[in-house]
Length: 249
Image 1: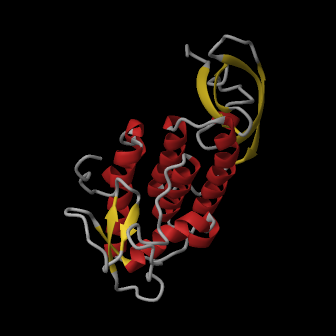
Image 2 (image 1 turned 45 degrees about the vertical axis):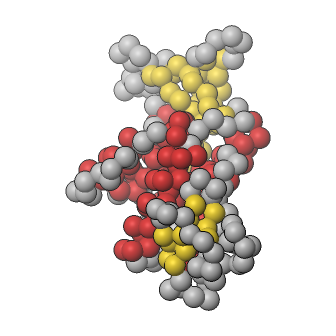
Image 3 (image 1 turned 90 degrees about the vertical axis):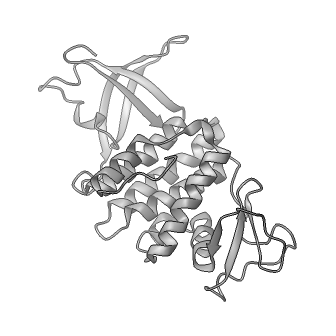
Protein backbone atom coordinates (compact mmCIF):
# COMPACT_ATOMS: atom_id res chain seq x y z
CA UNK A 1 0.00 0.00 0.00
CA UNK A 2 1.67 3.15 -1.17
CA UNK A 3 5.43 3.37 -1.38
CA UNK A 4 6.34 2.18 2.11
CA UNK A 5 3.31 0.54 3.74
CA UNK A 6 2.27 -3.08 3.48
CA UNK A 7 -1.02 -4.96 3.72
CA UNK A 8 -0.44 -8.21 5.59
CA UNK A 9 -2.67 -11.20 6.29
CA UNK A 10 -1.81 -12.92 9.56
CA UNK A 11 -2.96 -16.28 10.85
CA UNK A 12 -3.22 -15.88 14.60
CA UNK A 13 -3.60 -18.50 17.29
CA UNK A 14 -6.43 -16.66 19.05
CA UNK A 15 -8.30 -14.76 16.32
CA UNK A 16 -7.75 -16.73 13.13
CA UNK A 17 -7.12 -14.59 10.05
CA UNK A 18 -6.34 -10.94 10.70
CA UNK A 19 -5.65 -8.27 8.09
CA UNK A 20 -3.45 -5.37 9.13
CA UNK A 21 -1.79 -2.33 7.62
CA UNK A 22 1.89 -2.07 8.50
CA UNK A 23 2.94 1.51 7.92
CA UNK A 24 6.54 1.94 6.83
CA UNK A 25 7.13 -1.83 6.64
CA UNK A 26 8.63 -1.57 3.15
CA UNK A 27 11.05 1.14 4.13
CA UNK A 28 14.74 0.18 4.23
CA UNK A 29 14.87 1.60 7.77
CA UNK A 30 11.91 -0.42 9.01
CA UNK A 31 12.39 -2.53 12.13
CA UNK A 32 9.31 -4.64 11.49
CA UNK A 33 9.76 -5.63 7.84
CA UNK A 34 11.58 -8.89 8.52
CA UNK A 35 8.91 -10.03 10.97
CA UNK A 36 6.27 -9.68 8.25
CA UNK A 37 7.94 -11.87 5.66
CA UNK A 38 5.85 -14.86 4.45
CA UNK A 39 5.69 -17.87 6.79
CA UNK A 40 7.42 -16.07 9.63
CA UNK A 41 6.17 -16.54 13.18
CA UNK A 42 5.88 -13.14 14.84
CA UNK A 43 4.59 -11.55 18.02
CA UNK A 44 2.61 -8.43 17.19
CA UNK A 45 0.95 -5.44 18.82
CA UNK A 46 -1.79 -3.72 16.86
CA UNK A 47 -4.55 -1.16 17.28
CA UNK A 48 -7.97 -2.82 17.38
CA UNK A 49 -11.00 -0.88 16.26
CA UNK A 50 -14.42 -2.49 16.01
CA UNK A 51 -16.29 -2.43 12.71
CA UNK A 52 -13.05 -1.86 10.82
CA UNK A 53 -11.84 -4.64 8.54
CA UNK A 54 -8.23 -3.47 8.44
CA UNK A 55 -6.33 -2.91 11.67
CA UNK A 56 -3.08 -0.97 12.12
CA UNK A 57 0.14 -2.58 13.26
CA UNK A 58 2.13 -1.04 16.08
CA UNK A 59 4.95 -3.55 16.65
CA UNK A 60 6.19 -6.88 15.27
CA UNK A 61 9.03 -9.10 16.47
CA UNK A 62 10.30 -12.34 14.99
CA UNK A 63 9.63 -15.42 17.15
CA UNK A 64 10.62 -18.14 14.67
CA UNK A 65 11.45 -18.49 11.00
CA UNK A 66 12.31 -21.36 8.66
CA UNK A 67 15.52 -20.62 6.74
CA UNK A 68 15.60 -23.87 4.77
CA UNK A 69 12.25 -23.30 3.07
CA UNK A 70 12.99 -20.33 0.77
CA UNK A 71 16.19 -21.93 -0.53
CA UNK A 72 14.38 -25.13 -1.58
CA UNK A 73 11.81 -23.93 -4.09
CA UNK A 74 9.66 -27.06 -4.06
CA UNK A 75 9.41 -26.98 -0.26
CA UNK A 76 8.70 -23.27 -0.41
CA UNK A 77 5.82 -23.95 -2.77
CA UNK A 78 4.32 -26.66 -0.56
CA UNK A 79 4.75 -24.53 2.57
CA UNK A 80 2.89 -21.68 0.88
CA UNK A 81 0.22 -24.15 -0.25
CA UNK A 82 -0.41 -24.94 3.44
CA UNK A 83 -0.79 -21.23 4.16
CA UNK A 84 -3.07 -20.84 1.15
CA UNK A 85 -5.34 -23.59 2.44
CA UNK A 86 -5.56 -21.83 5.80
CA UNK A 87 -6.47 -18.56 4.11
CA UNK A 88 -9.21 -20.17 2.02
CA UNK A 89 -10.73 -22.55 4.58
CA UNK A 90 -13.62 -21.24 6.65
CA UNK A 91 -12.70 -22.13 10.22
CA UNK A 92 -14.36 -21.41 13.54
CA UNK A 93 -12.48 -20.11 16.57
CA UNK A 94 -12.33 -23.65 17.94
CA UNK A 95 -10.99 -24.98 14.64
CA UNK A 96 -8.41 -22.19 14.47
CA UNK A 97 -7.02 -23.16 17.88
CA UNK A 98 -6.50 -26.71 16.59
CA UNK A 99 -5.18 -25.72 13.17
CA UNK A 100 -2.54 -23.24 14.33
CA UNK A 101 -0.20 -25.77 16.02
CA UNK A 102 -0.69 -28.21 13.13
CA UNK A 103 0.48 -25.59 10.63
CA UNK A 104 3.39 -24.62 12.86
CA UNK A 105 4.52 -28.23 13.33
CA UNK A 106 4.19 -28.86 9.59
CA UNK A 107 6.47 -25.92 8.78
CA UNK A 108 8.97 -27.04 11.39
CA UNK A 109 9.06 -30.56 9.97
CA UNK A 110 9.28 -29.29 6.41
CA UNK A 111 12.20 -27.05 7.37
CA UNK A 112 14.35 -30.07 8.18
CA UNK A 113 16.83 -30.56 5.30
CA UNK A 114 15.97 -34.22 4.72
CA UNK A 115 12.18 -33.79 4.97
CA UNK A 116 9.93 -34.41 1.98
CA UNK A 117 7.89 -31.24 1.45
CA UNK A 118 5.18 -32.96 -0.58
CA UNK A 119 4.54 -35.58 2.10
CA UNK A 120 4.39 -32.86 4.77
CA UNK A 121 1.80 -31.05 2.65
CA UNK A 122 -0.27 -34.20 2.24
CA UNK A 123 -0.24 -34.72 6.00
CA UNK A 124 -1.39 -31.14 6.53
CA UNK A 125 -4.22 -31.62 4.04
CA UNK A 126 -5.42 -34.72 5.85
CA UNK A 127 -5.41 -33.04 9.25
CA UNK A 128 -7.23 -30.03 7.80
CA UNK A 129 -9.96 -32.36 6.52
CA UNK A 130 -10.37 -33.69 10.06
CA UNK A 131 -10.61 -30.21 11.57
CA UNK A 132 -13.22 -29.20 8.99
CA UNK A 133 -15.29 -32.30 9.77
CA UNK A 134 -14.93 -34.08 6.43
CA UNK A 135 -12.18 -36.58 7.24
CA UNK A 136 -12.30 -39.81 5.22
CA UNK A 137 -12.85 -43.15 6.95
CA UNK A 138 -9.71 -45.21 6.37
CA UNK A 139 -9.91 -48.02 8.91
CA UNK A 140 -13.05 -50.02 8.06
CA UNK A 141 -14.96 -50.95 4.92
CA UNK A 142 -18.02 -48.77 4.35
CA UNK A 143 -20.19 -51.75 3.38
CA UNK A 144 -19.28 -54.63 5.69
CA UNK A 145 -17.28 -52.89 8.39
CA UNK A 146 -14.26 -55.13 7.97
CA UNK A 147 -10.97 -53.62 9.11
CA UNK A 148 -8.48 -52.62 6.46
CA UNK A 149 -5.81 -55.21 5.74
CA UNK A 150 -3.46 -52.55 4.42
CA UNK A 151 -0.78 -53.24 7.03
CA UNK A 152 -0.79 -57.02 6.64
CA UNK A 153 -1.30 -57.09 2.89
CA UNK A 154 0.34 -54.15 1.19
CA UNK A 155 -0.58 -55.62 -2.20
CA UNK A 156 -4.34 -55.38 -1.56
CA UNK A 157 -6.41 -53.06 -3.74
CA UNK A 158 -9.35 -51.06 -2.42
CA UNK A 159 -12.08 -49.06 -4.14
CA UNK A 160 -12.62 -45.63 -2.62
CA UNK A 161 -16.04 -43.95 -2.57
CA UNK A 162 -15.20 -40.24 -2.72
CA UNK A 163 -18.77 -39.10 -2.05
CA UNK A 164 -19.21 -41.25 1.07
CA UNK A 165 -15.63 -40.75 2.18
CA UNK A 166 -14.54 -44.34 2.69
CA UNK A 167 -13.20 -47.49 1.06
CA UNK A 168 -14.76 -50.78 0.02
CA UNK A 169 -12.90 -54.03 0.55
CA UNK A 170 -12.51 -56.61 -2.21
CA UNK A 171 -15.34 -58.73 -0.74
CA UNK A 172 -17.96 -56.01 -1.17
CA UNK A 173 -19.67 -54.69 -4.32
CA UNK A 174 -17.55 -51.97 -5.88
CA UNK A 175 -18.72 -48.71 -7.40
CA UNK A 176 -18.25 -48.26 -11.11
CA UNK A 177 -15.59 -45.67 -11.77
CA UNK A 178 -14.45 -45.44 -8.14
CA UNK A 179 -10.70 -44.82 -7.87
CA UNK A 180 -8.53 -47.65 -6.61
CA UNK A 181 -6.01 -47.37 -3.79
CA UNK A 182 -3.29 -49.88 -3.00
CA UNK A 183 -2.90 -51.12 0.55
CA UNK A 184 0.29 -49.08 0.86
CA UNK A 185 -1.55 -45.92 -0.18
CA UNK A 186 -4.44 -46.55 2.20
CA UNK A 187 -1.99 -47.09 5.05
CA UNK A 188 -0.11 -43.88 4.22
CA UNK A 189 -3.35 -41.89 4.22
CA UNK A 190 -4.34 -43.42 7.55
CA UNK A 191 -0.95 -42.51 9.01
CA UNK A 192 -1.45 -38.89 7.93
CA UNK A 193 -4.50 -38.81 10.19
CA UNK A 194 -2.77 -40.06 13.32
CA UNK A 195 0.96 -39.34 13.10
CA UNK A 196 2.67 -35.99 13.57
CA UNK A 197 4.45 -34.27 10.72
CA UNK A 198 7.81 -35.14 12.28
CA UNK A 199 6.93 -38.84 12.11
CA UNK A 200 6.04 -39.06 8.42
CA UNK A 201 8.17 -36.24 6.95
CA UNK A 202 11.00 -38.68 6.11
CA UNK A 203 8.72 -41.39 4.76
CA UNK A 204 9.73 -43.06 1.50
CA UNK A 205 6.98 -43.87 -0.98
CA UNK A 206 6.95 -45.43 -4.42
CA UNK A 207 5.95 -43.43 -7.53
CA UNK A 208 2.70 -45.42 -7.73
CA UNK A 209 1.76 -44.58 -4.14
CA UNK A 210 2.63 -40.92 -4.69
CA UNK A 211 0.43 -40.78 -7.76
CA UNK A 212 -2.49 -42.43 -5.95
CA UNK A 213 -2.18 -40.06 -2.97
CA UNK A 214 -2.02 -37.04 -5.27
CA UNK A 215 -5.12 -38.17 -7.16
CA UNK A 216 -6.95 -38.96 -3.93
CA UNK A 217 -6.48 -35.48 -2.44
CA UNK A 218 -7.35 -33.78 -5.71
CA UNK A 219 -10.63 -35.69 -6.03
CA UNK A 220 -11.52 -35.50 -2.32
CA UNK A 221 -10.98 -31.76 -2.00
CA UNK A 222 -12.81 -31.09 -5.27
CA UNK A 223 -15.87 -32.98 -3.99
CA UNK A 224 -15.98 -32.02 -0.31
CA UNK A 225 -14.32 -28.59 -0.31
CA UNK A 226 -14.99 -27.29 -3.79
CA UNK A 227 -15.06 -23.71 -2.50
CA UNK A 228 -11.33 -23.83 -1.77
CA UNK A 229 -10.54 -24.20 -5.46
CA UNK A 230 -7.15 -24.75 -7.06
CA UNK A 231 -4.07 -23.48 -5.23
CA UNK A 232 -1.71 -21.03 -6.89
CA UNK A 233 1.17 -22.43 -4.87
CA UNK A 234 0.70 -25.90 -6.36
CA UNK A 235 0.80 -24.45 -9.86
CA UNK A 236 4.14 -22.94 -8.90
CA UNK A 237 5.40 -26.31 -7.64
CA UNK A 238 4.40 -28.06 -10.85
CA UNK A 239 5.96 -25.32 -12.92
CA UNK A 240 9.37 -25.48 -11.25
CA UNK A 241 9.26 -29.28 -11.39
CA UNK A 242 8.73 -29.06 -15.14
CA UNK A 243 5.52 -31.03 -14.91
CA UNK A 244 2.27 -30.38 -16.71
CA UNK A 245 -0.55 -29.58 -14.33
CA UNK A 246 -3.08 -32.46 -14.00
CA UNK A 247 -6.51 -31.87 -15.42
CA UNK A 248 -8.81 -29.95 -13.08
CA UNK A 249 -6.08 -28.65 -10.79
